[in-house]
Length: 517
Image (cartoon, rainbow, N blue to C red; front, side, top):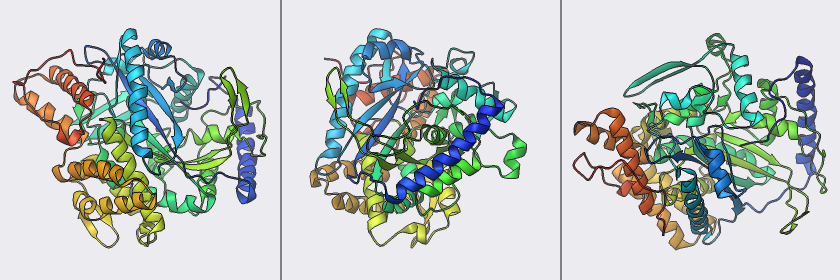
C-alpha cells in the first residue's frame, strides 16, 4: 500500500520545503550509491494484489473485515475496499525456489481464504474483476480507510483541475468522466522484485523494459472493465488514465504522465531518481520525523521513497535502506542490509498460482539471459520501439506483432516460441534453478503460447459463448466469474481451461478460490 501519511492536504510552503528535501535526498542517495554497502544476494520477492468477491460474483467492499479476520501483517489494504495485498518475503530462486514460492503462496492464501469467507468474501486473483460495476466505483464507499488514499485522491484531482476522462477503445468502446481516482482501484497486479547490484541495475532495468511487451502479451488477464471488452490487458489503460494528473492541454504539450513507460535506456538507478525529482511535482509532500540513517549508515530518505511511490513506472527503481535489528514479542528481528531492486509492475494478478509463478519464471529467466548473454537488445533497439511493443501487446495480447533485434517485425507468439521462451529457459539454468522446476513452468508457458489461451482470451471466449447462448451481458459476466473461480480452485493452468457455453451446468453461486477441506 505504500507509506501512510498524516495529512490529507498540504500548504504551499510545505510543498516548497518538500522539493528542497527531495533535492538534498537525491544527493544523499548518489553519495551512498557511490561507495555505500549494498546487499548482493540477488533475492527475489513478490507482492500480489487480490480482489474480494461475494457469492453473487460481485465486488465485496469488505477489506477491513477480511483483514481483521485474516489477522496476518503480510496482508494489507489496497486503494479499493474490495481489494487487499499480500507481501511475500524475499527468497532465493536457486534450486527449487520457484516451487517453494508457489507452495508458500498457496498455503498463505488457503489460510486467508478460510478466514475471509467468515467476513463475507472470497479471494480472487484477476487483473480486473469482470463483474465490477460503475456503482462499485461511485460515491465514497469504494476507497479504503487511511490518509494516504484520501490524500492521493485529492492531490490527483487538484493537479488535474477537472474531472478525469476514462476513454478506452477496443472491441468495444468505453468513455466516461470520473469524479475521482476510483478506477485505479480496479487494477490488481503481481509485482516482482529483483535485487541487483549497483553495476547491474542499468542493464537489468533496460532488459525489463525491452521485454515488457512480450511479457505482458503472455500474461494478459484483464480484458473487461465496467462490463466492456476493451484491451487484452485493459489494466494498463485504466491505470494510466485513472491517475493522469495532466489536463488535456498539458498532455498535448508533451508533459509526462504519472503512469510512465519512460523515455530512454539508463546507465544506473540514479538516472531514474533524477527524472523523478526533475519531472514530477510531489503529490504527497509529507515530511517525516524519523531517523535519517540506519545503524549501518544507509540514508533512510523517507521523502524520496514516498515520492518514488507516486511515480508509477512499469519497472520501478527501489532503494531500500534496510532495517536495524530489533526486539519483538516473538524474538529478535535480524538486521537487513540496504539493497537496490527493480520492481516489475507489468503483470496482472492471476489466474492460478501455477500461471503466476510461470510468469515470474519467464521474467527472472529472460532478464538474466538478456543481461548476461550476448544479446543485450536495448543496444540494438530504439526505446520508443519497446514502448510501441508494450502498448501493442497490452491491446492485442498474443495476437500482437512486435519488433525484436535480429527478427524485425514478428508475431509475438512466434518470437516467444522461437526465441524468448528458450532464452528464458537458458536464463533459469544460469540462475541454477532445478531442471524439473524449469520444465514445470516452461511447459505451462509453451502450452499457453502455442494454443493462444491467456486468461484474457479465456474470459473473452467464455463471455462470447455465454452471450451466443442467449445470456444477457450482466448475467454472462456473473457466470464467467463463477466459472473462473471454479477453474482457479483446480490449480490447472489457464491454457487448459475449457470454454463452454450456456448448456454446461451454469451456476451463479461460484466457488471458493481454494478448496476448503
